[in-house]
Length: 118
Image (cartoon, rainbow, N blue to C red; front, top):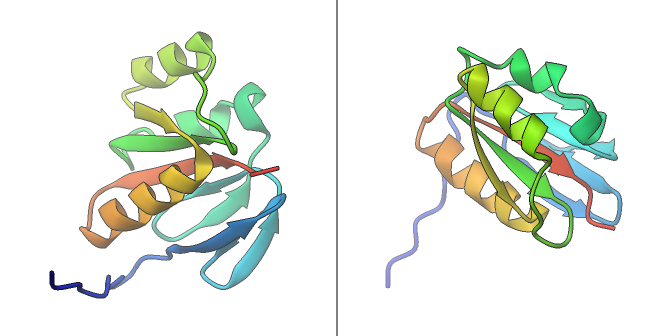
């Protein structure tokens, strides 16, 4: 099997994560975060939908990382984002980080909203 290194032309990948933090483009951010192609910012979690709604038109899908374990996101959050035209895929945060990096490297319009692994 041939392995290829992922290249990020003008994008900032998620470098790593740990107990309560994410490292994005070499910058450590404590707590929940939203990552887009060129930005990373803190996020208030499920009760803070506005930053995700604001991504409508910029991204096609948001990968929502639910922390260490996979769980459903609140149905009201899913409905709100889908009504705004933002697709939602939920998975545990480690999987969301990997999926985000891969689709980002393909040049796709994606974001990740991640709850920390505790």
